[in-house]
Length: 98
Image (cartoon, rainbow, N blue to C red; front, top):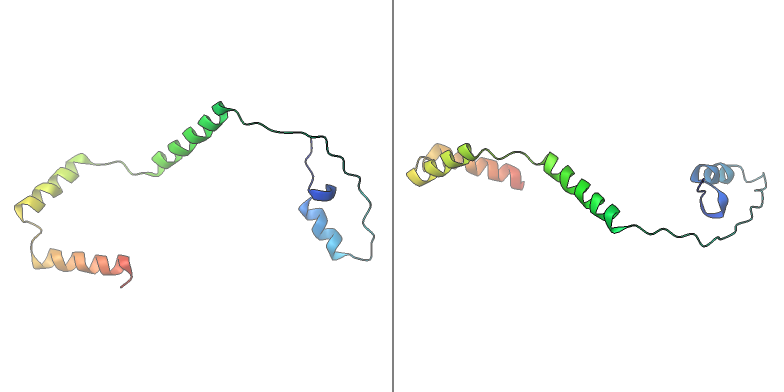
């Protein structure tokens, strides 16, 4: 089954016919057959599943050990120094576009 655009023309055919107005466009008869499409719940589930898999594939893995080390350094005050605070401020200014 070939699906054609409105009036039986594809977008490419429409642009070609619009460029040459001196050539009369052939008359097309359009009949409506009343076709319909129903998407099953299974297909919707598969689409949702594909979306979730795509998001997960683009999400970086979490390095729990690295997170735990950073938490310990925060608790111990290792990040509470001028160099770290200045570096953080610079990054925030850059990210926020200030």
